[in-house]
Structure formats: C-alpha cells, structure tokens
Image (cartoon, rainbow over all chains, first blue to last red):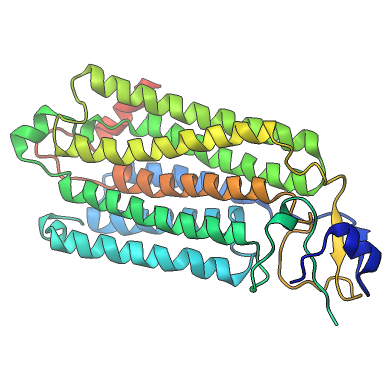
Length: 115
Length: 246
C-alpha cells in the first residue's frame, strides 16, 4: 500500500475519490447480546439441575462454546474481518486447547475425574 | 489500476502491512493469542490443583463456597459491557461522538461494577479465613480469577483514558473511500472511518477478549460440577443458597 495522506489521496490520486457514505450497516449487536444472555441463563439453570454429569458437562461446554463464538464472531468482528485475524486467533486457541489436554493428562486430571 | 492509501493521523504513522491490514490490529491479535496461552495454563492449573487432600480442602476455600448467583450477575455485566463497547465503536464509525463517549463511559462503569463484585467476593472469602493460602483450590482459584480481574482493571483504565485522548477527531461524518474509481472496491474489509477508530477498536478487542475469558472461567470454574469430598450438598442447594448473597 502506498502511504499517502488523505489530502494527497483526494487531490492527486488518479481514479481515487472520497465521498460520504449513506450510513454504515452494523451487525446485529443487540440481537447477539440477547442470545448471549439467554444462553448464560440457560447455562446457570442447566448447572443447577440434578442431572448426571455425563449429560450435564458436554451441554455446558457446548453452551460455553456458543457464547465464545458469539463474542469472537460478532463483537470481535472475526466473522466479517480479514481471514488473517481468524488464523491469528485460532492458532493460539488450538495450542491452548492442546496445552490444557496435555497438562491435564500429564498431571492425572483425567484419571482423577473430569466427567 | 486500483490504488490504496493510508489516511492521515494514526494511519499515516502506522502504514498497513503487505497483507493490507493495520499492523496495530495484527499486533493486538498476536498479543491476545499469547494471552490465551497464559489463561489456558492458569485454567489447567486450577483443574490440576483443585483437588487437595481432604482435610486441607475442607478447611480452606471449597467449591461450595463459590457464589454462583453473584458471579452470574458479574457474567451478565461483562456481557453487557461487551455490547456497550461494540456500540461505542459503531457510534464512532458513524461519526456520532456524543454516543461514542456515552457508550465508552457505560462500558467503563460496567467493568468497574464487575470489579466491585469480584472485590466483594474476595473480601468475603478472606474474612472467613479462606484466602489464597488456605488450600490448593484457593490458590488456583485466586490466581486465575485474580489474573482475570487485573485484566479487567487494566481494561477499565484504558477505557477511561480513551475519553482523554483525541480519538477519532478527524471523523466528522461517516466516510466511504472509493478506490480505483469503482465504488465498493477495497483491498480488505476494513472499517471505512479512515483508520481513525483504530485506537478504540484495539481497546475493544482487548475488552472483548477479557469478556471471552470470563465466558470460559464462568463455565469451567463456577458451573462445571465437582466432587465434594467434604460431604456438603453443594451442587443445586448451595448454588441457590448463594443467590441470597444478592
């Protein structure tokens, strides 16, 4: 990319112009917030129910993942932003998950009890 | 031939990378990636160390002591703060500085509320002699939630500092840049505020990350069931009883 200023850009940029936009269309932030809220309430209610851990834990983890996707996808704009940011975010995340599994196995976390 | 440019202000000082992306955003995402490894280690530390010897565990902080009701309110507050943060950025991109400041202040106040809840929770534990050194569970719990709380505090300071910075003052109205003579042709899907909102966007990314970490902590630490070696009927009953804290 050339590093010209906005003034340069409007005055001598061939074929380049600046014009007011009608209005920005933003993602449905409030709708996402409502969904996050609903999932959070569902999570808490689900955790309070006297259900077998084998059923409770996976559902809780799924709801957690849904909330995380909502925050990352819409609020952090990964859904609409450049793919490079998605790769930058998902790489360390996958390493983190691997780290948790490896350390957990190493220190006998699975042997103790997880589910 | 399509031309690209760097807007004045912050953009001029920080030219985009060869990928056509703002290097400050790239740097922030890389930083957040390293932070996620930090938190992953602390979460693992919690799971590995949460089971102490029975006597040690029962005399210190236990899973039954965690206030799920109060923490749920904290989780709700952080989620709402993420909404106000993203609305602040949207207002800035729309050129509405008044609403931008309102949403930023709201976000900072919500963050402060979350911190107040966490301080209250920590103080209650400490007053009952269930501090960080009471057992392994307490050590791992305070390390993880305290580290997260520190991040929230830094975020709140950052948010308040945005009010004193001349952020986005060159955004008088929403602008759409037309590159190469064709409307809508841009090299990447960057916001069309000429880069003036980048400082706010960086702060927003950090704030959303703090919220994201709490999404994980809330479920993994507070909601996932845990064996109760002390024989307390903590699961549903204690969770409901802790709602009385409110």
